[in-house]
Image (spheres, rainbow, N blue to C red):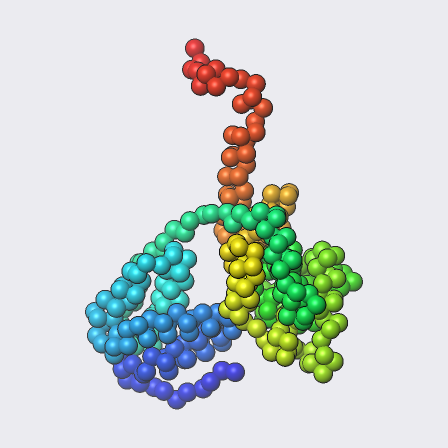
Length: 316
């Protein structure tokens, strides 16, 4: 629900940063129709900075700039840097509109180039992961079904955790990701394989009858919603058992790469992953193309038919 405030500070006067942040996220909800997950990401990024530098918000803009640069200069992964940059810069842009700031200290700061690495997980390891949950318990069956669904569709963990039973169509073998659950706020329908259908059908069948139809498919045994951090903790437990580190999001990468390797085109992959543009999908395509080059170098019959010195020789 959007909160209505009567704050009308004089130009240049800043409210407490928590109040400014709340107003900002309300603005984004109404004007940009962002998901609650994105709201949470904005809150997390800005709050982390403000807690690390509690005096920066009340200081002059030069000190604010120094503080935010220190915050972004620590040793962090490129993806973490880029997330912090995007969320905090958007907040500062809004602060300029509200006249809380005269300039954005992050204007012109570029994203870091993330390493384009394929998340290579061997089939034996994925099999071990699927065997790790105890399917005789509700939590184990839930975890198994969620792993299977992610490998089968590439759905984002945050999207999967918001699905409710009516989004599951067993007869059509489909999962519907409604706009309110989708990161991009665009609904999509994902085909699912028969083993995934059977597992989710079984999970829904063992739910207590008193649970509401709005109780998520992948919830706690008490019917409470899970979040992606809780799911990450569950995955970590299974990873310790099988001796291999796998993040929930890695399963999405595995789907994308294997989907392309097995013949799917970039447009189908884009639709499945819910990318708003082909830009993100092209990264997976590039990784698959790199795989092809490496395999060609190892497996081309020319490498067997022609001696190395002939192939390396110059044409006269």
